[in-house]
Amino acid sequence: MRVTSDANKVAQLKELGVEIVEGDLKDKSSLENALHGVSAIIFTVSSTFSRQEGDSIKTVDDEGQNNLINAAVDADINQFVYVSFCAMTGEFPLQTAKRKVEKHLAESGLNYTILQPTFFMEAWLSPALGFDYPSAKATVYGEGKNRISWIAITDVASFAVASLDNPATKNRSIELGGLTALSPLEVVNIFEASHGKKFELQFVHEEALRAQKDAAQDPLSESFAALMLSFASGSEIDMKGIIDILPMQLTSVNDYAKM
Image (cartoon, rainbow, N blue to C red; front, top):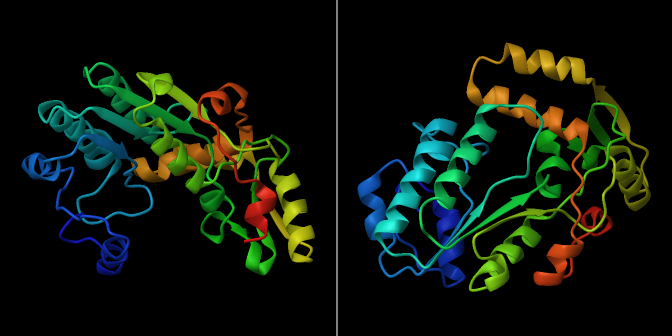
């Protein structure tokens, strides 16, 4: 945690029995103490949704994450599990940072696992990104016909834990998807059936998303527009081989719609 971390979230972690230590990716010296007595790292930090003063793609997703890898090498960490994301359409700052960190980790000498999930249900099927299911309204990026292997954040967490001390995941990059690939329009149909409401749809065409990306004034805005373009293009992940080495019950969009 950082000194500026949300006190309520920190309290919730303590109630779960989590030992809390202070550290900041932007402060190299703080990482030495944070890693004292640690044998493995599962790393999920990003500046995209939760940012404070001084946080950016450059300072957190690029330099900060590389700082942690360097500190992990110095601390003789046994294993480093890095949650990144799967290949997206085109180049943009967040993707550039992720691939740079992946490369640095792979070349660090650490035992590593890089997990590359596709689009999270909890983020992209939420009001925050235009899927306002409580109000039966949804923003659809592109035509809404390309399929996505939606994945639940909790499933990614389970994959990360299952990767620890697992010879089958050692020094590998693994793409992760969900149970079934569905288009955004198919997802809307599932929510309509589950909630008993007809959705009002608003389409944002790919030309508008490209214009938004080209006109972006900062790396974060450019990255979000690029992610929406990738969303519109679809992202299907074949999970058959992965489930063989990391067996678990995956959350379906139907499950999520009923929550």
